[in-house]
Image 1 (tube, rainbow, N blue to C red):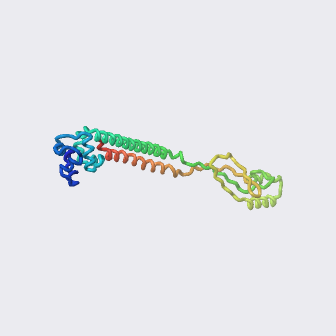
Image 2: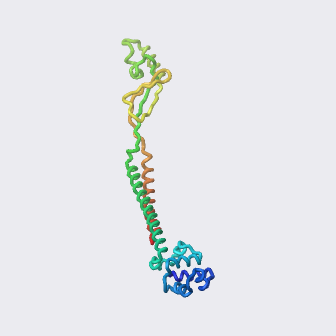
Image 3: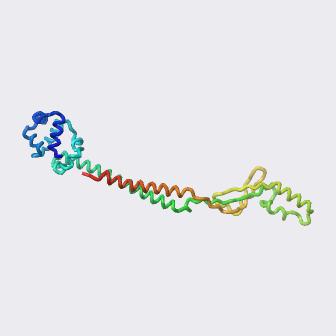
Length: 239
């Protein structure tokens, strides 16, 4: 559709005759006839007068997809050229934002996926310590391991058995897990005395965080690719 055809369409839609529109736009009837037959292109001032007479905004007029084929010729009108240039700059700015966001999503996705692949990064190491019971005041730290060696030589068998029974009754194993290595042993004050914890082993717990990094990375990567696809569709025709 040409500008002349569009002007005629708008005139008829508003039930204007050619003389009525020519009078409203303050132009000659013959000139309006030439414009509707595309034998002439209106000056910028006449173009504004026609839009005002038809009560049409420039943006609404150019929003018509049928006028796309005539846009190159219409750019000779300064108002149209300025409007299209402004719209093009705005569209390019939006297009760049889509590029930046989509690129950022892909970069973040690759980073998260790489982090997720390194399962050791989130594997937690715990150090197990164990205490056999409460050490009383005046007793050595390792009394539960060394009590037999602290008995006087030649002591009666019954005394040894009684001491063994006592230590068995006092035995109350407590296990602690520490996130840092506290050494071969550590002593902690508790109610009734203190506990002597001996190092047992290092335990590596299962990594449950890395898979989530990989999942989020894949999702963000897909979103980034989809962003580029949508960008090509949304900004396929940039005037």
